[in-house]
Length: 380
Ligand code: SIN
Ligand code: CO
Image (cartoon, rainbow, N blue to C red; front, side):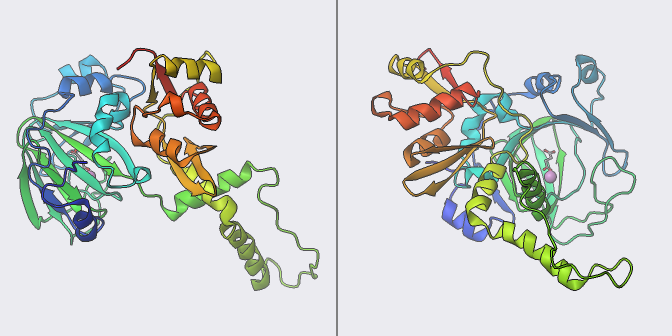
């Protein structure tokens, strides 16, 4: 498969740059033609479902203003000529064909990939110098944008500012990106992009949970189990001697109780895979009103229907004896490794109905009935 890494192959990119240092790839996408334009983005930013932001201001004037969508047509009619940026998250989930683009980054495991955020900036538009917690591939889709970056910088943020903007910023490198060029930045590298002319930057972002995210998720997961993961007990309690004291042995016992949850691989691994299949997902597929059954699904597939993964479905899986445990937006399914791979491999999973076993058909039917998979009757 072609990767957007130019001369650098995935192996070299991961070994030398991933999470280590910035990487500029000129013409990562030669002759790049964006499938959506600024008007499409503005239209999407008016939708209730979309997560959109409008940033106005400049680093020089330190006059930042942030508004959250949904917006309306008047918002865009009233915008000044310069110095604004419209940003929309999860665009590949709203425009499913854009999933093909994200798919080109699948040298990174799917569970690490987050979304395609598109920003449209007027000349001078910027979100200010800042740093992110995530890896990002900044693909210039239209127009020219100048990116300045710094690895060593003062992390202090501008006070009383609605955005996370650095108070001061001195660039170590700068590049002007043109359509098709791409800049990879690992977490923590400060960057400042300024549009030299109206245009779009498409950001393919990675996702990485913090320990706080995981432990909070684990807490919520345990809270839903019948016994809440067990409860502290102290049948050997001795009379308390010093007011307010929680003694070291008790702290040790509480820590041990927590550790026993973390050491329970059989339940922790399913939790982690389920957690990652929902982490940072802004929406979840809704169940369709009509429930179908295995016979109808099999008949539809035999008649040439195709399956489409709901763009808001997120899948993870790991191998278990005899097959795979698949998690679709938090829910577990046992199936074959082949089915797990087929469902994850493409937004239109290639399933041969002639070799479909009963377990696979049942999993597909359950995924259809929960809205995770859609059946398209017309042949593509
Ligand atoms: C932008 O597209 O203007 C901002 C993207 C980023 O800095 O991560
Ligand atoms: Co950024």
